[in-house]
Image 1 (cartoon, rainbow, N blue to C red):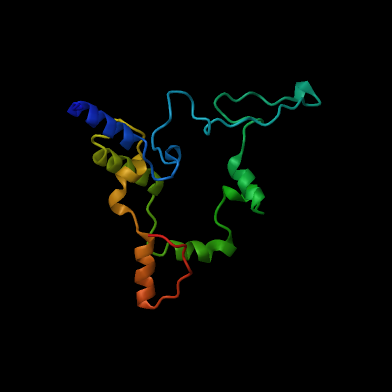
Image 2: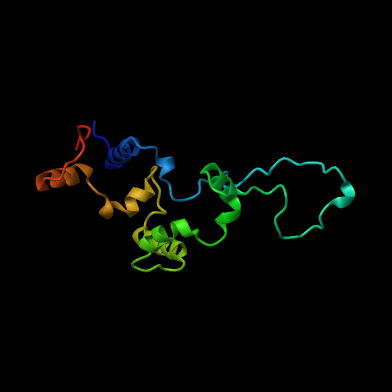
Length: 172
């Protein structure tokens, strides 16, 4: 009994869809998982407090922050041992040498926005057929495949040059 070619092709595609490289693809998916809200963009507010004197409440400021808003930058500065009130100000004198050394080759204004736009353009150009989904695909690896570094080849190259390198797990 001979199987039709279409049956063999469909069976092959189904088996290929089951393969994977062991990495959870949902961690490297560059697109939002659905049409709902992003759970990481929702911040819980600080607990509400009842003031001692209700007549001394501040005037509402529509569109501005309020007392229950989270302050992630100030919280991070405090957690790292800094002063939140100094976070928005100028660079302290004790850190000026560090900032000067880090910016010795120049500083590009708006670098984050520029890199985000370039990355989106790069993925758009590389992803002409990424909308066709037969199986789960690692879109990040697909877009940046030509830029992947082989860690074992780099380790071997450095060892040949005589650079002291740490031991690496077997593989590659």
